[in-house]
Image (tube, rainbow, N blue to C red):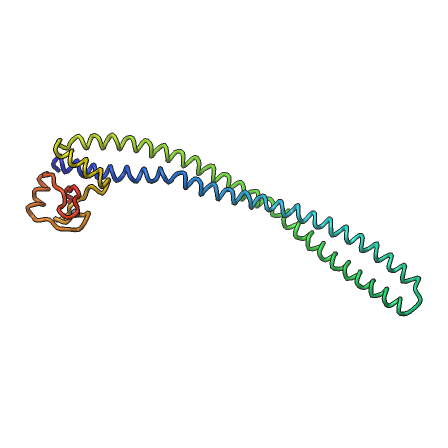
Amino acid sequence: MPPVTSALRECHRLRTHLRNLQAEIDAGPRVLAENKEELDTQRAEHQAHYDTITRLKLKQREDEGTLKQTDERLAKLRDQLEALVAPKERAAKELEITHAEEKKANLEDTILATITELEEKHAAVPAVEAKWKAARDEFKQFETDAAERLQRMTEDTAASRTDLTAAEAHLPRDVKALYDQIVKAKGPEAFAGAKNRVCQGCRSTMTETQFMDLRDGTFRTCVNCGRMQYPVE
Ligand SMILES: [Zn+2]
């Protein structure tokens, strides 16, 4: 390919590549924030497990205290019943005892359920710890990878800029002036390949003569979209 159109094709490739690199570099902080957010979610989940254990232990202790009081009250009520003779008074005391017994049975069920739940929570601790460690490891790996990726992209950007300058050096001075104007306005969209006379930027068709000129290395812009063209085989 003649130097001018060849240089335009290379400039197109490099400017597109540089724009994509910059977009990925710019997205870095957002991707990092997303990963941090996920880590925070995992941290909260991990903490919540131990908070639940603390809460259940407290509940168990409180319920056991209430159970002890209920037992003491039952003993007292039974003593009181012993002393009563009148049927009406005895019936009232028996009802009180029945209620206290129900309360006791309910408390015992609740305590048993709490103990069972606590056992499950304790049994799950290794899995909870493993999950939390995996989350931290994953984040650490992400940070390492991101730093490497950024380093690579920064180097690639510098190299591509050098290559771009070299490619642009092939453009004659009059072409370069126009090139600068169009690039300033359109960025990487300043270029378009032309395949079988069709502009790849806007799909318009050029004449056979125009396409011949283009293949001969004549600098031209698309009459329809204004992009600088180069032939594509
Ligand atoms: Zn066009």
